[in-house]
Length: 228
Image 1 (tube, rainbow, N blue to C red):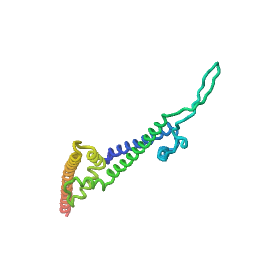
Image 2: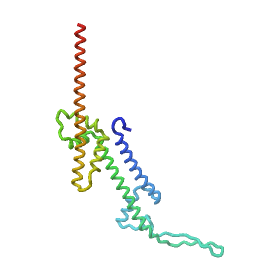
Image 3: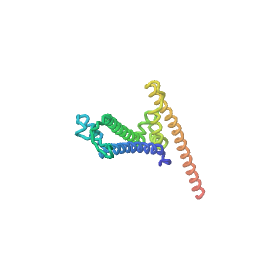
Image 4: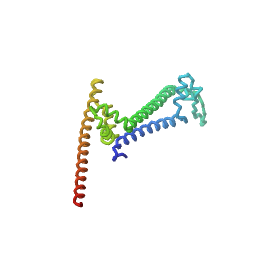
């Protein structure tokens, strides 16, 4: 699930988004079954009929008039009657269910678009690097490779998602401009601290690696001299 490669949070987030989309599809299908509709695009057809002014007598959707059958017992006889009933409530039901249908479609489309956007922002390496470059104060040319490792290994997909979440939802909601500046300063401070620490550790690893190679070369030369 991504515990080892730093993608656990993003995987859980995308699974949750997929469940949201499945929930919307399920609600539309339940509403179709409740209304007796066999076509998932019935909302588009009804909206088209409403815009064109087609009456329910032509479309058959949400009828206003129906035949009601009932029985009356008189002198041990059962009399059956059929009368015309006016279903005024269907005038409101048509608008209510039409609104619910398009609201679910709208929410579903927004969820799909936002999920794709988050996948691109957290999974595409170039997008990560371009996003972090806006906040890092100074990156030297010789530090480019280290910075790429910092974005991919140190921060990773989970770190990118958390920082973007903070950037999108964090801040003090006093004034809009102040909130944006506060969020950017906070993200910049966090990233610069992480970058400086990673750069120091990387330099330390390079020094230790160089010392190890030097020591191994010296020991090899001493062994060669002894053998000679």
